[in-house]
Each structure stands twice: as C-alpha cells, then as structure tokens.
Length: 468
Image (cartoon, rainbow, N blue to C red):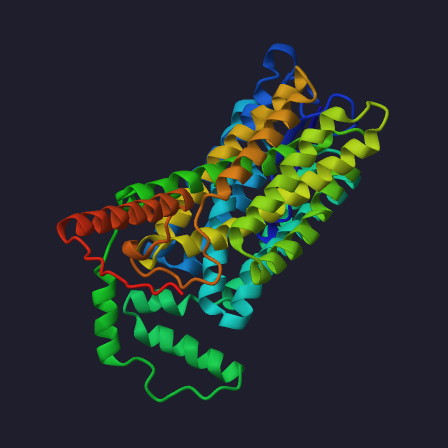
C-alpha cells in the first residue's frame, strides 16, 4: 500500500509524498493488481517521489526565466493550470509509468506557481506587509495546506478520489485572474509605463493615498535602462576564492538542509502510531517553527540562528537510535522536534542568502542555492528507503549531515546589521579567510617595522640618572 501526501492547491501548495507503509490501511495503489510495487519492484516507490522532485528542479530553473519574459501574472496562472490539469489527468493513470511522468509535470507546475506567486507578492506589496508576507504569510499557509492533507486522506481512502478532491480547489483560483494585478515593477522593466501607472494609481486610491501627477520621470527611466544593461553570469558566483567558498558552502547548506527536511517529512508515515496523526503533527510543528524563525531573524545574528536550529534538529534526530523500542512516543516526539529545528533553519535560508550577495548576482545566487535544495529533495527519498535495511540508519545519516552543515554555517560571514553589498567587492569575508587576512596584515606590518628599524637605526639618547 502507498500513502499519498498531497496538499491543497488553493494554498499554492501541493506537497507530494510517496512513503512505503506496509502496516497501515492507507491507499491501495493497484486495486486491480496491475501496479505491483513490492519485492523486486519496491525501488519504484522512492523513484516516483524523486522524479516528482526532478520536476520541481526543472520548474525552479525555468519559472524565473518564464516570468521575466512573459510576466508574473501570466506565468502564475499558466503554471497553476498545468498543476491542476495534469493532476486531474493522473486520476486516469493506467500504469506506473504514466502516473510517474504526469507526476513529474505536476512537480514542474507546482513549484513554478509557488515561486512566481512569491515573487509577485514581494513586488506588489508595501514594505511593512512584504516582510510579513515573505516570512510568515507564505510559510504559514504552506503549513495549513500540509495540515489539511491528512484530514482529506483520513476520510477519502481511495487514492483516485483523494487526488480528485485535492485537484478541485485549483479551479477556485480562476476568479483571482480578475483580482490579482500584474507586477508594476515587471511592467516598468518592459517599458510598459502606462499599464504600470494604471495599477499604481488604482492601488493608491484603494489605500487612500494621493498619487503624484507625474509617476515616471524620463531621467530616472534612462538611469533604469543603464542599470539593466549591467549583467552578470553564473561564473561571477565563483569569481575569487572568497566568493567561491561562500557559494560552495551555501550550496551545501541548502542541499543538506533540504535532505533533512524532506527526509523527515517523507518518513513520517513510517513512524509508530497512526500515519494520519503523525502527518498532521508533522504539519502542525511547522507553524511554531516559522514563528520562531521570524523572531530569530528580527533579533539575533543569522549564523548563530541557523546553526543553532540545525544543531537542535540534527542532535535530537541522532538521539532517536538511543530510545528503547518500548518508548515509541518518545521517538515520535524527537522526530517532531528535529523537524521543528530543521524547518526553522530552512525558512531562514532565503533571507540569509539574499543578504550575502550583491544586487547584481543576488537573484542568481538565490536561484542556484534553491536548485541545490531541489537536488537534496531528489536524494531524500532514498534516505528513507534505507530504513528497510536498518530503521535507525536514515536518522543517523540525516542527523549527522545536519549537525555537520550546522558547523560549516559558523564559518560563513555574518550579515545581520550590515548593509547589503552593492557589488562583488563589498561581499563579506568568510570567517577563516578574514582571520588569515588579519594575521597576514599583522605579519606584513611587523616585517615592515623590522625592515624600517634596520634601514633607519634608532638613536638611543643617554639619560643621566642622579642616584641619591
């Protein structure tokens, strides 16, 4: 039997999970016996999940380019149509191969509308609302969709009917086409100033603000064109030793954190107890995790906040192997606490990465690290699969890697309280490089002083001391 973990399309969220669960009364994927995913074919279950995340990886790569080319609003609703439409077609799958191919396409649509919705929201909302939207807003609704999933799954035991029930809410988003505006920022970059002005004046009227008579100064528009001519490529993320080290460390941080997050999420139905309750708890624990992450970002340094939550998540997951088999509830509590820590760290990575890189490569850096996290999500199902050989092995590996990357995080620069870099030369130094540079400067200064003393001997004047 295969337990499907599906979210709510209406919350711009469709979490997909295929976890092998031979002991529960979940869903019979092959009622006719045609999809026999056992024994020699048991490798197909984690492969299906991995291929979904391959679709997520592809969607992450193309969504930004498509939205830059055709507009935020157009791509948002187009990818929502892809997600909803192909999810509906999945209901009529006649083979595992057909289901898996459709699953990959759904993954492409799901992450694309998620990313584009995030970009659109940050571009059309004011500064005060934008911070709440990008931290608590998106994440909390993600968790709400996650919580709705086990409730749907508990009452709808047939996987085809469950998939239909989770696809229908996507149709409720159609009327939003006449409510959500296009991004004025994107319209300005396309020199569609008249359309942007209409949207801005409408927003000003709704907010009770009087818009100026002239919104777009021709001189400022020329300066904007000059700024758009400055381009960067992927190689700029590896321009020198310091930047390359920050990039490699960031890629590892995103990938290993993603392995921990998705590994714990996908292994939830394998825990002792009711699979539906465990999935619900796994979703509920994300709400306080996001709130804590938001508070940490407002008050404490980034490195210590991320490293601390990673130490918490990885450490408690490592303790699971020490729990006696009779204390099943304690194991579940430790898994949820580990999920809490890793989720908090994961939600802080977007802000931290954006603060490390200058404007010219910031979007590229966030996109590259986000793609690295998709690689982690592709690998994560195989960590869960290792539980078939040793039930503690997935937790030992995920816990160890999480603690390790927490240690690595401490060597990254601290961005809290520092202005955002405007160019590559203003990027902060990696901690070990900074220390070496300081030591090198001190050594050079000392050598210079010694050379100065040799070249220009110091004349010591005689001092007459009168001894009484």
